[in-house]
Amino acid sequence: MFKFESKARSSERAAIAELRSLVAAVHRSQAVIEFDLNGIVREANDNFLSVLGYQLGDIQGRHHSMFVDPNEAASTGYADFWRRLNAGEYLVSKFVRYGNGGRRVVIEASYNPILDAEGRPYKVVKFATDVTAVEEERERRVTADRLAAGIQSAVVEGTRKGLSAMAAGDLSYRISEPFPDDYAALRDDFNAAMTALDAAVGIISGNAGAIMSRSRDISAATQDLSSRTDQQASALEETSAALEQFSATVRKTAANTTSTDAVVNGTSSRAETGGRVVQSAINAMSEIERSSDEIGDIVGVIDEIAFQTNLLALNAGVEAARAGDSGRGFAVVASEVRALAKRSADSAKTIKALISTSSAQVKTGVALVRQTGDAFSEITQGLREVTALMSDIRSSAQEQAADLSKVDTAVHAMDQVTRRNAAMVEESLAASQALSGDAAQMIELIRRFQVTAETVMPSSSPAAVTRGEDHIPTHEAVRPRLVAVAGRATTADWEEF
Image (tube, rainbow, N blue to C red; front, side, top):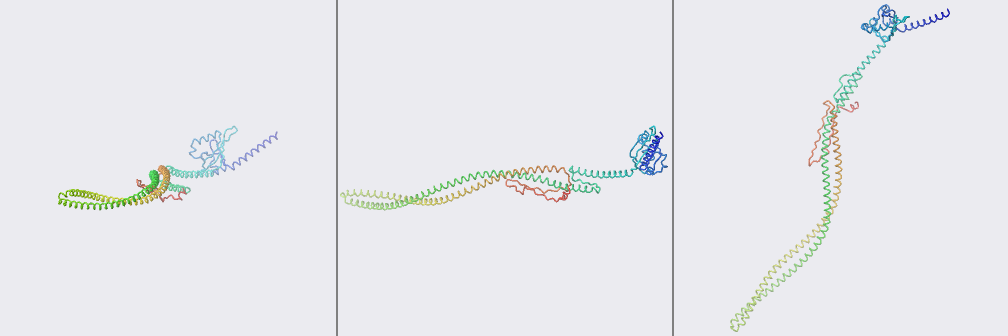
């Protein structure tokens, strides 16, 4: 039995020794202080005294509130703190305490109510570790982080305002608030980007109206060109039809010229025959004239004979009258002879008058026949000339027919080209109208932006487009001129942007 008791005591002593070793280890590594349930300091080890900067006599018998901020010590939370400890509840947390001279100390501590044999608390032991340096470093980092966060927030806010202004279309906005050195480049880059964008949009804004105006001019000119092209195509079509008809007429003329040439040749031959007949008639009329002259001569002789006979009859009558009755029969005969002579003379005169009239008419006929012969000669010569001219006309008509065929082919090709041009003009008109619509849409988009006044570059006046019945728009009249702008938005600016 004594042996068993000796072993139990040995075990108890070993356990007590171990507990003492543990307590010693705790005292070596941690600050330890004891309080009664009212918060009065009973004991404190060297670590605690070193952390707070006190001697044991400075704190022993004094209340725990000496280590606490006065405002905290007067609070209900502090009273509740001791109420919970008195109830046997242990508390573990990080606490701010104040050492000698009011020095701020941060500790990680546990307040441990110690229970008696009956399980009731009779004192409180606090185990603490000085984390002031760690906490100060943490607070420094927090402060630095908070400062950095504030700086970043200011930078973000400044940038946000700039981006909001950009989103709202205000390209004149610049970040005027200075940024910290680490973020100064961001501010400068943003302002440079806004300046470049402001300049670019200003240039676009200055030229957008001109683009729209010129696109409308192009559209109007193209519309006019389209109308003129349609008119030209219609005119070419009519010209082609007229040329075809004219070519047919020329071919028919050439054919008719050949027939006319044959007719003229026949007429010329007949005219030559007529000329020969007229010449024969002239010769015959000349013979008639000669014969008439001979007959006139004969009639003259007869008239002379009748005159002589009348004289003889008159003499015979005179002699018969002298003879008396014996000469009466002879007087009767002489009277009859005188009457016959008178009738012969009268007939001769009549014949002579008729011969004279006939001779005059024959002369007139001869002159007329000669004139007819001359006319036939002239007709024959004219027909020869007409034949030569008809030959030339036939050759010219054939050449014209060939040339007109070539012209008709060229006009047909021009008509095809004109039709293709009309189609291209329609496409150009559609493109210019689409360009005008795009320019209007671009203007509507640009109106969302507010730019500085000096960045709006004036555009050159649009080229005037004159449209009239006698004016065909040229490329120079409707071609937009490029506006050379020396803007501030350089290539480097855009690369940086």
